[in-house]
Image (cartoon, rainbow, N blue to C red; front, side):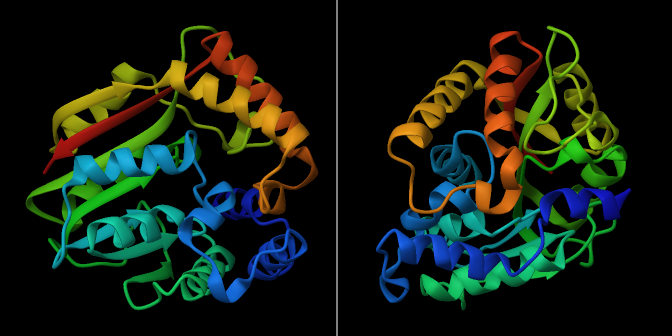
Length: 272
């Protein structure tokens, strides 16, 4: 199953080279890039960079803190957190190709010494107990059936009192999800929890929920704006570089899923 998940997110080829080619065609100088230039492709979650900045405020990480990004993808959230909060971030992702691309993209924006990435499984993290001051996971649990293991591992590697944020797509009350979607081409690798299940999972893992935010209405507006922007003035690099030719259909389905309440986007701030 993990191989099928990795295959869904890795279309083949050198991801960093594909993104570099998109940026170059759009007239961007790779030696003068900022994290904002990469946000349309490396902030791999609903509401993009705005959601990452929201999570950064929740975590309250600062200089001297070590933060874990579980399911770090192309590294956008890790870089944003390191840049805006002054902390160090370690990302772990199932895909070695994503870790390699995340490392390259970090060097482009001068953050290679503040962030690092390594392959690993969210249900068996390659770290010792209590290594991290804070942790986050953005749009990862949708692909993981063994959620008790995932959240138990997050709790294990956090110091007592450490903050943990979860931002995920959850199952809504409107019925089955329309596929394909960004996290799954078909239902077999999609494992959505309901909001009620999420709260139970976090509590059972030993977390205290401090705050929750249902951003579903904001997410619908974000996808509608993305659909308009992509057809009229697309950004220099987009998620189509990662998700392939099915990307436009994924956007249409996400709009329908949110309108029909088949999915919800919810964030949780927790304390270990």
